[in-house]
Length: 93
Image (cartoon, rainbow, N blue to C red; front, top):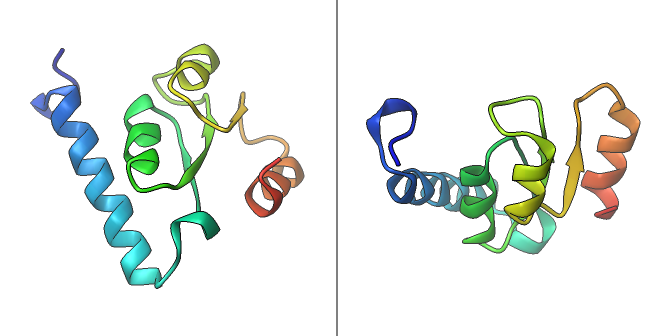
C-alpha cells in the first residue's frame, strides 16, 4: 500500500526505524530511557524496532484505534492536556 511520498509501508517503517536509531545515537540515550511521540503506525513500528516506547497522539492521519492497534503504550486524542503528556513521558503512564 503506497503512502505519502510514494514509499511502501515497509520502506517507511525502515526509514522511521533508522531515524529513531540515529536520534538515540546523537542523544547518547538508551532506548529504555527514551519515548517517541508520534501519530502514525509507522512511527510506532520505527520506535519499537529500536526498543523505544511510544506515546501516540491521534491528531494526524491515524485515529486513536489505529495507533492503539499498532501498539502504542500511551494514546492521547490530542495535545490539549500537556501535563498528562509530560506524565506519560516521564513515568510511562
